[in-house]
Image 1 (spheres, rainbow, N blue to C red):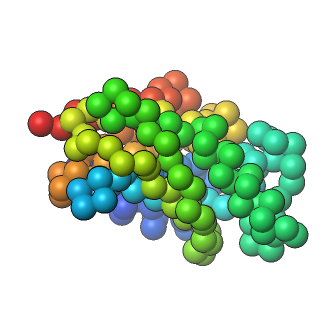
Image 2 (cartoon, rainbow, N blue to C red):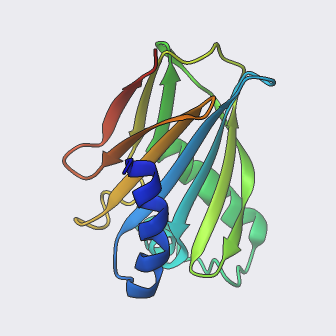
Length: 163
């Protein structure tokens, strides 16, 4: 069974067993807009700790005192912790926003225009400095063909190749 399907099944199971330290990053190339669309799912309590550790600023994701400040912190955190390049060219990921769903935060980003991916390099260090057990699952969908990476503190980046 491909890692992408296993990660989806495990996510629901792990929500009930938290403290599992995992995030899920779904990347998809949109051939119409020629952009990479990114959806990042993170347990909100873990993200609060990551933001506090990174910027020495306590936040409450469920009831933020200042939603604009929280948005800026999340945007900065993702920019600091995630980088993606396609065919050797770094993508500028534009932060679109976030929403809370049950135990997790969904963060949405979209790249500038890029050519159809043949090689994708991903660095995803979300929460890797906060939890030694942290794992970040990366799924990249190119026209229905999904390739996956599993990143962790000892392996913070990886490469996906498409034919």
